[in-house]
Length: 328
Image (cartoon, rainbow, N blue to C red; front, side, top):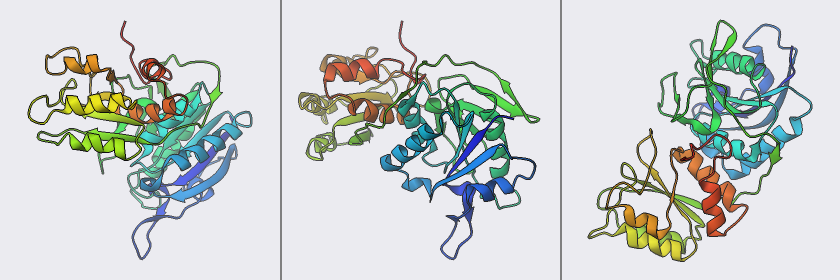
């Protein structure tokens, strides 16, 4: 059997009832014991015990460093994590651990693993199976579905099929104790580890009637990059409340603006409609078909390398870890 490292960070899967509500309390060994069976090939590591709502860039760095230190001592890694920010963590790890030669499989639960009807035990079993069968990369295994980490999004708050693969094929499914591969992603080779990131990135979701001053405030708040969720393909107000002018002011200050869509599926583009064509002239960078989570974490990662607008644009529009379908 292959050697697997099980790294625990808390989340609902590890929660136990307390006087103040559910809180992470189970260790990785305790989670593993709930499965029964022989898992003598699994080495348990407790990194921290946190609700994923509290997972932030500092924790991403700690997780990435723990994974890097495991490379060479195991054949795969399972990372238990809360579901609420799992897609952000999976995306960021995809960039921090680009080209990792072993699989890193994130999983968690909608209900604590100690509950009789919990999905946590099933998800953990499936993740351990996947970690023994996959090639290198960062993945999310939830329910019976396996997704590329930088393409997964949490789309449901309580249902057991909480995650979907957005604009990308599902990697596989786990059935009857076996991983059935549906798609083999072509990911970059050559392990390139880096935890240099700039978390000073803002996400602005446009709504009808929103004041452009909200975008201007980013300048005063020491924000170094902005992801804007526009309407549809990437439209925004150009009359009365002119978002285009506000975005122009951000760009003039050297703050890159990444344009994505409020729609989950298919790509954003400022090139189709007259109302958004000026965005291209301003130098706004299209997120293409990246998820919002991937757009945000990639921008943090890119800004950790450079503040040169041309280099930021080049890297944001280049497919690095499977997060983006490049235009031909």
